[in-house]
Image (cartoon, rainbow, N blue to C red; front, side):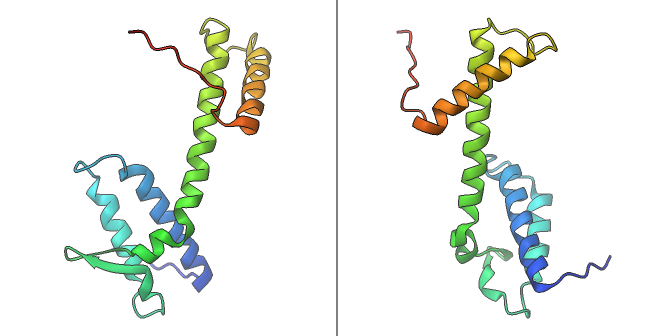
Length: 137
């Protein structure tokens, strides 16, 4: 297979590959899905000889994204995504809890969305500062 990309497109592909592997493997510890690591290594190997060597490094005999790549802003994009997903899931869970945990149906959809939007507005203004949890002891 041959794929022709501009330098800028290839750089964006590196971001996409890194983010994808991060999502799939970052929480797996030693149980990583090695096939994705290998694809990431293969894609990043194309940095060599193209003036992008600083984006890769050799680790235990395998080419991986370099520290310079990982610290170059990609994690800010991942964190922004994670924050957004966290607050959306939290808003949905709280809205459903308020309605005694029904499944979302056509009949309650508008009410669920209204409650979710209220929670999302609160989170946008105050983050989790006003969220409290009463732990049972």
